[in-house]
Length: 173
Image (cartoon, rainbow, N blue to C red; front, top):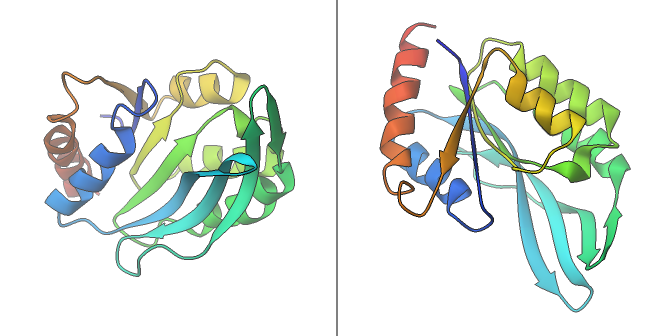
């Protein structure tokens, strides 16, 4: 049985919402990494933050700015704070990694931290973009990772499905 489940699907289909609803349904505590997107006068801004279901979210840090067609990615933020958030996770029942995308492609320290956690024993629930890249393809192909597609039709059932799957995984720990 695979220990980690990553959701994938179209933008704004409800992947992150499904993870939050799953955590609200379960008695599992979680820590890890999350991203936020905000619109500003400078375009869309991507922030990263610590996720902790017990302590709440902490301050967020700007990691990228997008003003189509231009992307300004602060790879150093992923390789420092992002990698630290991933490495420090696993103190709770489950690790949240929400979300992995192409912006991390040029952040080798961050990517190494993700693959280290994928090889570990603490279950992960996360989101991985549908886009193709060596990093994202490697996450999807990892032997401990299962990929679930979220659609408008099935998104309501995903939190219960995750609760069922992770109850089996955490019972075996």
